[in-house]
Length: 65
Image (cartoon, rainbow, N blue to C red):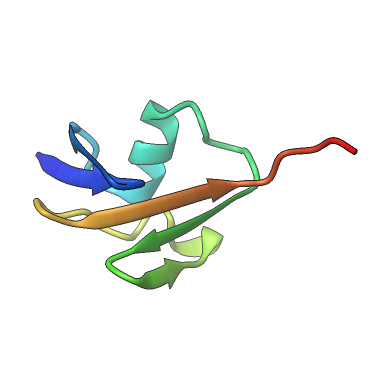
């Protein structure tokens, strides 16, 4: 399915936000996810279904000083 992730069109097999994070190597990391302008709480990552054309923004915290 074609979706836009952080401004880049991508073809993904994931059907939920959690599956997408796993495929991107971000599962278990501290990330904020927005789908079509709506923030998806971590507790809903496994339930939030993705659809073709969705716009997903993923932001993760980087440590450092």
